[in-house]
Image 1 (spheres, one colour):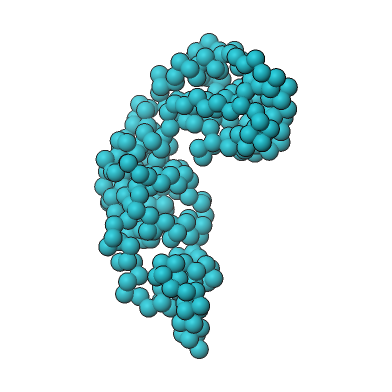
Image 2: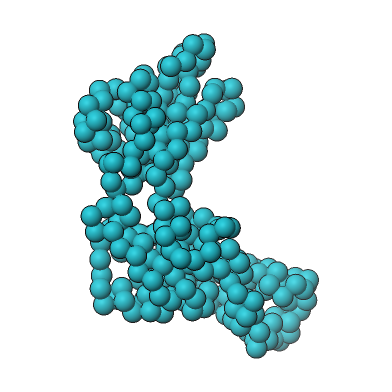
Length: 282
């Protein structure tokens, strides 16, 4: 595949559900490369068996990303061609891949993307929400404080936003979105390209109630409408500066972060926010 002294690193997109979505080019690379670095070798072996591919496999996942990445880099330098795959979709998108790419680029090793299915884009284009410009947020922090802090940071984002979420955190995330982003349109895509593919369309409050009453399993992608002009100010327009800070503190930010965020949202100096908060505490 490559006649150069060093090998080539291939980033191969694998199906997110339906095996028929794999590209002919991905299959060719997986068959002809020297080694496949897989997030879960058991999962990838099923794909390889289905297409009668017998290339050697090695594990490359979040828990060995640094150590194994160095070993893969050595093999690339020695001239081996390596394909990186995740369980589903494109490596590096909420999955291992970005670290080995960084190492390879630093060593002047050729990096070749072999594109294919991506859950975020599939959900976005089928959502019915604007998709000319969008912001991909991936997985929000798993803890409530971190999740709410991140949502506070993107409350004014005008572009459509795309998130990944696990089934056991789905309702909590939707509730936090409703409380912090306000009630806005959302599409919850589940099991994209699989037998039980489902698109729930409504607003955040409706989605909370629906999934409380209809708990389901699967892989979820949330597509949330961007902020409208009235939403940008409605959350705090009638609050005093001190109350605004306290509201952010209650949502999970520490006091220093809340003061910084209030200053940013209101377009005023941090020292002005500090003076209001300090005056309220005297």
